Image (cartoon, rainbow, N blue to C red; front, side, top):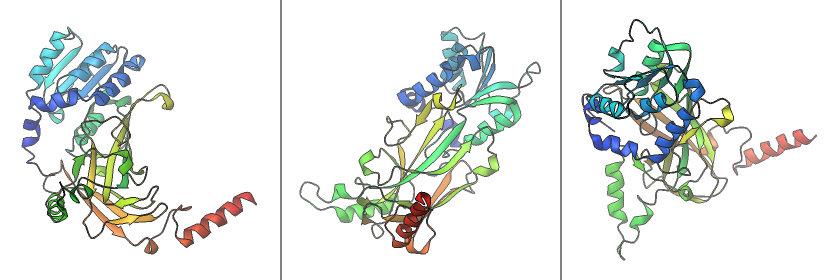
Length: 347
């Protein structure tokens, strides 16, 4: 997914982008509930909203009892955010600042902030690279005991079927269009596809590709995300690609009470949808329950545009790689090892 870096901020001045996000109810409700249900955390606190956009998250923080909110927005959308704050009579609490966070400075009277709030997530989580700016804000402006909203992210991957790129072209009003579909896949293979994946098209519930604690992760750790895995198929189907999604967890009084924003196929649909890496025709095959799929997936920051990432997938022969222990796949070596471990547990 390529984009001129200079266009990044300009594109966020398009109000249609913000309309899409504001109408994304799971997104909006997650932030609203995470902030309002933790009003004791926000009471009389100083908050920094990184990439404030229309200012709605800043308004939530003010409503939750924050003493002061710095709404930092790099584009001239800051002018609209100010109007929103004025409309809601919150100017005594929310201070809108038109600035890149890297150029922002706290007033001399304010040493550090208590909470950083941001909706920075892009497609497949890291696309657009805004997390760099959020971590810059954390490192420069957040108190050592401060909170990040959200404070954890989990990136998932699962093998899946992709009927929109394969099966839907077998019969188009009685005409086979599979040759056209092959060319279409070839044309679209240069970038991952953002689409809504049906839960029934997942061949596995999903395995963790990457986990981040946003209060600790370092910017240089975002250069690459690499996983090598053997996944055991949980339902028979056509292995046609990989589905990628993410969850975000917000701070709470207890871990069990945390609000979670999920973009997975089984969760309510968000504007992020899911990311699909479609496999070439020659790779696709029918797979059975308990069949192993061995692969390596790399998410690598682009050298010429650090806001974006390249996704690479390599498949391996399951017989040639090490499997997790225990492994539920149907290979003889894994069945024998699992049986041996179960026997040891009962002895």
